[in-house]
Image 1 (cartoon, rainbow, N blue to C red):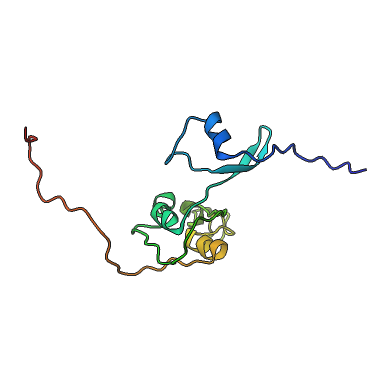
Image 2 (image 1 turned 120 degrees about the vertical axis):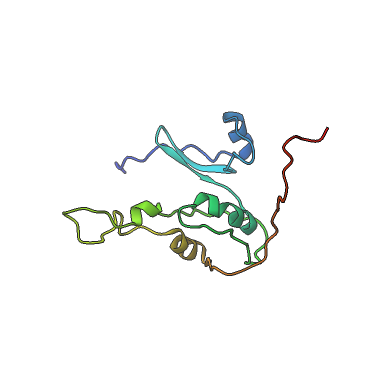
Length: 146
């Protein structure tokens, strides 16, 4: 007899059921399905994304690390389910602590977003010069034309 206590896990919840449970819709609904849900403790959800969507959103998700637009150059087609996490940049910075070694990070085992993309997805973020479309506003009228 197994006496090890196991958390109660709810069966997988699909997008239709999620949309019935919460009021959010795309682009605020950043989840396609819940694969594990623990009573009063949390859940594990999945968002199926293309590499183009990842490139488009990664700068916003990891703004402390990335200050340039990201362009998808992978050539990978289709949608992908994956779990990726990284340590906030502030936690990787050395903290002034008289009891800690000089320059010791508050989370020495943490991953930067660059390390996470490489280790968890097998991709690499490389800074290059590339032409991208932009909108240029060269004049603004003080009053709108009627």
